[in-house]
Length: 257
Image (tube, rainbow, N blue to C red; front, side, top):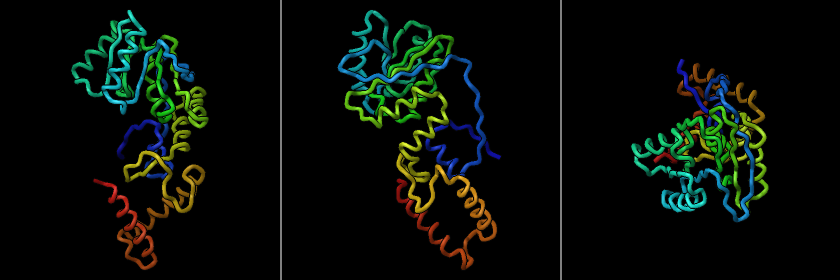
């Protein structure tokens, strides 16, 4: 049996709820202090905290933001990290941050994975309403990895609506990755399993991926049984299934470039 470890993200939960993957939940907490998460609304003022900006903002916008934070945090040594910096330079920046020579890191979402700095204890995420819950949970996981009490501050714009605030409050209430991924799945939808969409509800004629898991399991088992007995779906009673499957494959391939 092939084994693969997956983070609890909406897309992975969609595969589980659709029962395309057999799975077991292994919960192994990191021996560290959980980060306390608070939501704060921006009112035109800047806070002297470490800043995370979306990678989509680009290196140019990140550099402009870095100049502002460098002035605000002076004389504290600061560094800028984004996706367009050469790998060797990135390694040097992270090593200085890890050793404590750099006290504040202004970064895009390039820090979302693969960063382990135990002394990092404060994170501020700007325009947090623009991110998905699972991504924010991943970002928050970059702090609180050591013995120090940690804080993750989700800063929202003044135009953030009530839905965005409700979404971010979920992060303030729990650090359970599965609960967060499930909430993100309900809010944004899982997108396409075979297509390119990363959000949106699946095109089910009937059924609910959240509430009908048992029915979907029965349907899956029956589908495997039919596949074993009639792999090409050539029997007359399976003609409808063959037609539906052919149309579904054509639709999925239409999104592949």
